[in-house]
Length: 106
Image (cartoon, rainbow, N blue to C red):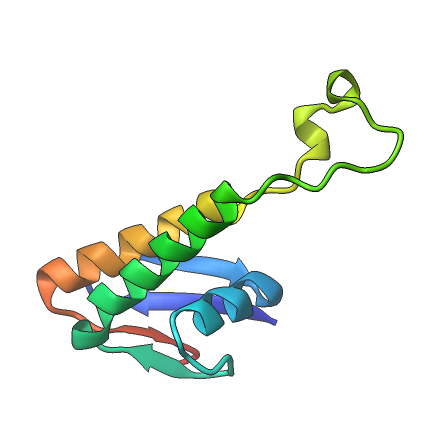
């Protein structure tokens, strides 16, 4: 399943189910086939996402046994939440500026 987040204020943001579920849980929404983030909820959603990105960035990255820093390559690193949320936060900001809700599955 894919999430397709839509707003009349900006382009759609498409995410895989796992990432979409994670972001929705962070902002206090129940993952599912349809939903809405109202204009009134957007500031709290953005704040929750930014707080979670900051919290995760402050945690040390798990180091695997027998792995040195020289052996790690950028391709070995998973894409961080901080990178994944950028288009979603942009969508939320643009929607808030224009007074439009963000929906998915409709």
